Amino acid sequence: MIPRTLAENAGHKAEAVLADIYSHTVDSSAFGIDVSDGEVKNAMEADIFDAWETKSWALKLSFDVVITILRVD
Image (cartoon, rainbow, N blue to C red; front, side, top):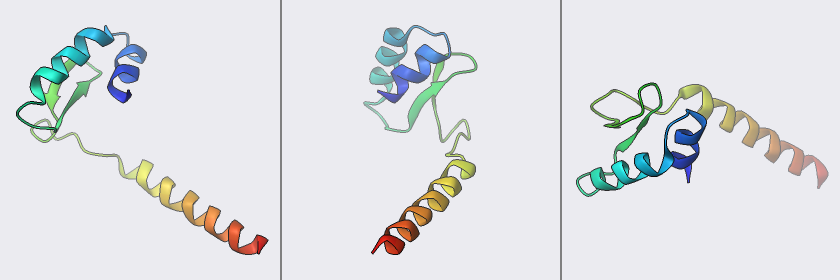
C-alpha cells in the first residue's frame, strides 16, 4: 500500500514500481522506491533510513495521548 501511494504521489507508474519491488524482495526485504528517480533500491546500500523527526513526533504525540487519557480518569 505505501509503495503504491509513494509512487503515485511522486508521478511514477505504481504498477511498474510494485512489480520491480516484488522482483527484488525475493532476496531481501530492504528494498523500496527512491522517489527522486523512480528506481527501486536497497535501502541499506543507498543509506536510506527512517527519519528521526517522524519517530520523535510519534513519541511526543503518543505521550500526549497517554497524559490526556490519565487526566480523564
